[in-house]
Length: 250
Image (cartoon, rainbow, N blue to C red; front, top):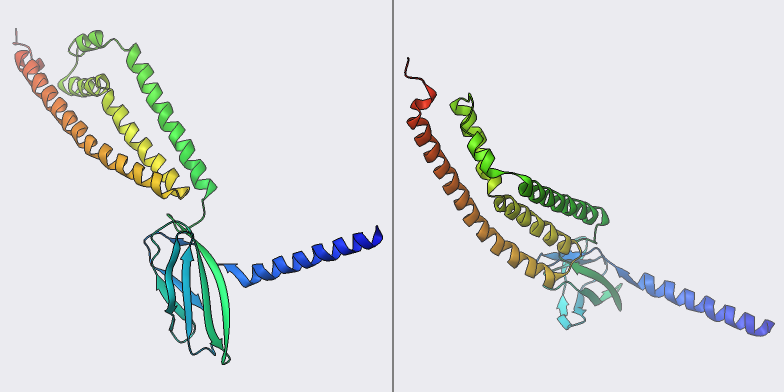
């Protein structure tokens, strides 16, 4: 039993050493960003050449390409087009002897790891927008717009008060305008959350939805302008019929 225990301990020790050695040999570099130039670098003062091969799970991206010596290190400009892990295998003549090296880097949409703080902030903001939408809907159902409309011109009100109260009345009556704006904000927040999670395919769908939603937003703005213009025209007509609130002097 003691011999077996020692053998097992020795095997585990060797496995740990191998793992540590491989981790040091194949290290991770900083993350790259999709469709953004990324400089792959490798220091070697004694090298006269360095060639690298770049590959990911889809296959070889660049095979045996030459790096450029910029005086302090060897560099290669690479623009990734997919959010995957990329492995770099290279060879160079360090001290006149051919030697190999390897490392890898991740490619993400944002160029950085998922940030839990930003994602949490987006989720809180999203919940806040949903809460505002529910509050507006609940308030809208409880409002008696017929009584509100009748009270606009009743009582001793000047022209400015009628305009302001009437404008608020029209905006709140057409509550879908605000809900549409809030929905647009929700789409943008969800797109940012997907962006932080580095899901390229889903992000493309949300970008398409956001673009279509933004086109619809133009129609909503046109409707708002038309509603406001109609309200102004009706208000001026009403005030004109009432001699702009000025009595006949009797």
